[in-house]
Length: 614
Image (cartoon, rainbow, N blue to C red; front, side, top):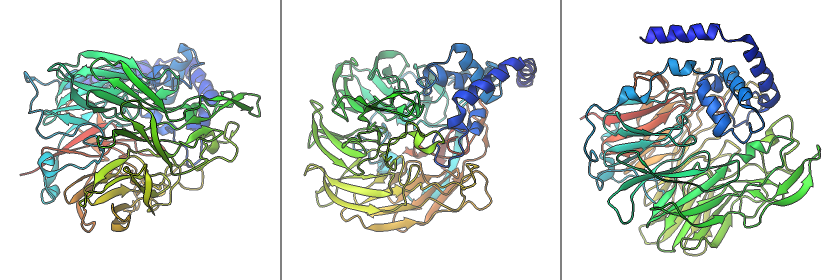
């Protein structure tokens, strides 16, 4: 049957009208190539190689209602279809004929309730709790440092037609909840990987998922946002929709960070893709402002919305083409909010400004009152950082005058109580600097320590982890060859550090692991890290996931994910670069995504599950 499907797809491809390919090529050259074919080393959009690995349906979805919808808004339906077919080299619908749906991996005997106790081992949301520590105690992890060397692959799940596996799973009650670039959210059995249900949101879901009980009922729900800025509550057992709301009407808005659930309210971070859309010299850059939206978890009704930039963007100057520009703008929130019950505060970290004048709340940590959304305090780490992707392109028309270094925060602040009772709010930045603030003194700076060189793809990217004594920080500092080929340098970037939370002094360091002759490889550690007592786990752009002893940085375990897999849902599976989400450790198992076809990283489409061999 598989051979017949492949033969049919090849037959359709051979009959594909040449005119459609030519139209797609012309449209791509006119409207897409400036970003996707750029030879600049810092380009943050998928390369042609990554696009070719996708299915045409997935690309069309991105152009129509996904992450590229705001950029492709002027293109007709036929033009979008032509572009999707051209960049993937496949006719539309062919991808569906050669892959297998989730039906192949359905559980044969679904349990009547949750497979395990809700108060048992779990990893809920982005940071395994509302403080976003990404630290899992032994009773939740179900493994110790001595167990880690015995981790072995148990199963792999494949995301059909994808070149990225960018959504971190949540595990509660023996169920695993995970989103994907294919506009699906799935519930899997955490032990076997079989599919319990599938839900189809309006846009791709890269945010981690939060689980909680609906107040006033016995109904468990999962909460998540998509790349069209919709937020959903879905019955955790059945996948039935409970409510759905759009939290921001701006055309470029999206939800990339996990909504944080606390005391009956859902705190949703709002980011955007206007940093890319604003690079078009005909685009009136820029009008988006980041925000936190508090929703009633039972109904989805908005309680408050707090913008990271209080001032509404207004007309400023015109660019060289005569296009009207706006500002201030930007300060998107890419990561999950952090909750502080003691101070009754919500902490968030913001991105760079998009246009002039630069905001004093961009590249900052902000504290909002949990009840009202009122700004309590702000602590800016990098000032005057106005930047759009055009600053790295040949056409810099919309690049702000005196552009900043693009040193925004891509991760959540971590709230930690030290052994002496003092509290620290710690976070690492793309600048390569780790910061510690005092949440009990309006964000007073306690210490700042540089551990990386920094840069638009440098410093610390997606997430750090912390126990009671240290914060563990992975460094990207990814670098490219200077010859314009966008090839990753195999010997530059990377490194893992443990810093004392009380002093900021480096107390543990792991040197970068060079790639040698490995192609499409970098030592960069861009993905979020996670920790259990005595161990920190880190996945790399190289495709390796490794575990290190927190005491001395000794390597305890490693696994090369860049290989083909037989998946539980019969989708062709292959691993690649590890970026974005970090490892999840629950009940004697470790889960990691593999595949990230951005900035020359190796594409891939799998979620991998490891267990300790007893």
